[in-house]
Length: 454
Image (tube, rainbow, N blue to C red; front, side, top):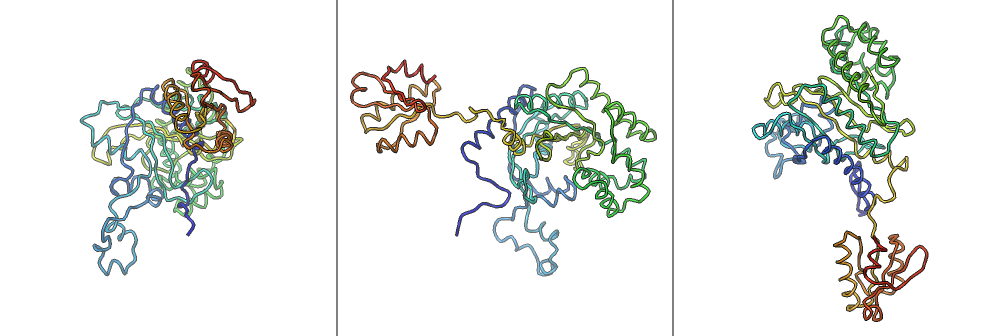
């Protein structure tokens, strides 16, 4: 049988790992620059930690882990015959792979609240799993790079996160990125004024799909969820909500005049835009998108979604938002938080498509020492150790193979220099170094070789 891996997962070659590390290191550096500290949580959690936190669609995409041992032992014949998967799963699975890093973080905060200084700023770079249909930029196993602040209701945190996004994409030399922003209070206000307050989740989940399924598709989904024709008619202005930021906010003030919650959302957005105007972004655009909903139950304030440049066909490459009571699901009330996430895999694909990875992203071996035999190898390895102490990447070919094979290996690896040391060099305490690009070679001392490789 031919070996394979599950759909939606990937193997990574050395160069791919180097490119991923390049992105992660830039993100990590900026997280730390903004005062965030790293934590890690387990790859799987108790099912009741995760289930019910992401809405119906999210719950469906959580990978469940079968209990060890005879997991069907607790399922009686009547339940087994009923084939009710929802009831059966609670008997045979008590753990699940994490769907994101935010809910495990909320669990962490509650569990370790006595050891945490609030406001608590943490970042986390770990894999997550979703039982989604694989497609370009969407995988079943992927890394998330999250930063969150809990214990503060200040909108300056939202402003800081927008600048954090801007700094990361500036460092990645990725231009044309748009940070879309909305506010959950605005969505609640709209649902209230159009008469669909009792259908808020269905309304926002459908609205969030506008860019994917279009106006007609959104209307059909709203109808299917029982939202009235009158409410759908009232929401029509949102399908073509144009203008600059000031014009959009004026339109929202008019639309939401009768909704206290909606107006609060407008004021919060106005604060953020005013701050960004005073402290401009370097390389990204901040855009008010009133259809942005991100169908997750826990957002209560600002909602972020980051779009790749228009020249690249790619879904969101980041997102996040404000959650006023996420820890409340674990019994810790009135702890507000806000956080963002970077989509590592999609950012990778964007940088690859736009050819934005630096040539030096993979730290290449500077020199390969040829192996002529035991005595020569020992002579070379002593030099290799000294070079490594200086931070110069060098290696010795492990076998005393034919010269052609060793040189071919250096060529395939694109190693720029090959170092040879035979009896003559050993007696002179020198090395012969060959430039693989020009083909020239010369006999040099250790110090001269070090200068050349540096």
